Image (cartoon, rainbow, N blue to C red):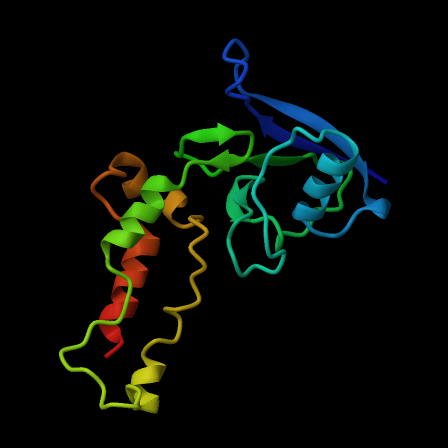
Length: 184
């Protein structure tokens, strides 16, 4: 069963060529179930110049964040829609400068994250040889705040960030700021 993948392509080394969608066809019976599996197969067997980020393949690092069929997500956790009649569209995260193909410049995103000073700040040092103690109640307040993997999917989906990326920190940085404020 063949599936069409329409992938955004742009190479800064060829300034005369504008960005375009390139079609690739894969046999899904010979491909893993996730979009990242398809990208790896295309790169390994069809076009070694296809450029994208990836690392853990487990949804932990956020490296493979991209826009798949109109939704920002991580390719390693996104299953391939098996419908052969429906092409799968893969584009870079929106409203970010594209470095090449599916790779975007995350410099501003990480600078904004750094600006919140994401580390524990205290007024007193722990006693010699001791660690800071945290009650189960205080620990519970952090649930839902530390799962963010800094993939930039939420930030690049945010209209407020699109309109003012230099001033508005975006949802990921704000979530992390709140996480560190809550951690006593």
